[in-house]
Image (cartoon, rainbow, N blue to C red):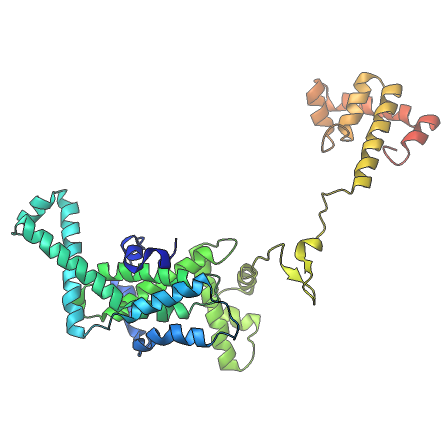
Length: 371
């Protein structure tokens, strides 16, 4: 189910919790405020711009309809003024304070109301105002979600899914934001939205999921490579990259191995793209019908010869030692354990059996197989 099917608020009300972060992390983000788009109002025109950029004859898809519906809904809600943002945030904050109080006291709503020196009806009214304020804050900041999601296009996660994950981060930001700390809401929300989107990419973009700490290292690798290339006006060497990341060259090579993406066996290759990758890969375990038939005939012939020449004990030892009845040959010790014999006794039985099989008229039938 996607964002177009549920609607914005239903998505947000079912948002998953994200890992809480310290204020130290947010102070670092506040210093990066220049990363936040200055003209968020322009985002509402993106739906029309995307449509205009499509080639003539383009057939509109269900995905396009969903994106267009989201942009249309987003454009309905204006940006908040600073004083309005603070007032709404305080109302939302009250909801979180009530939750914390209720959890710490293990109390009913009536007991919480008494603790706050208000009636239960007054408490319910304040909570309702908080929910309305939360919806308004979220809807008025959807432009920020779209702006950040656009930076992570073509990373293996569909655009609508990026928006949905970003909306969940925005939902979490409204719950955790404290307007009295002095941060702008856009600065605070930017961090939560970006975290939600990058976590989604780390979890869903690759066929083989990598741990989050490995994904973070790969992101640092990519960033360092880009910065060094700009600084040096050439591609950096492995030694330069390793020095910039403060790791060894061997560790750098291991990270670069992890950057490789998986390819589908149905991936088409060649100039005409008329061949699938699996058509070019050899299955070493897959025998041709001719080889399979030849192997069956060989086993049958060997089995008949062993039955004609050897005693039952000798036949069992030879078949086990050469893997005729098992997938792999057995060692002297393994055969000895099966028959409660010593390794030396098994070797003697095998030697006696092989002398019989090396007789000229017998060896001719087994040439190239056992002898």
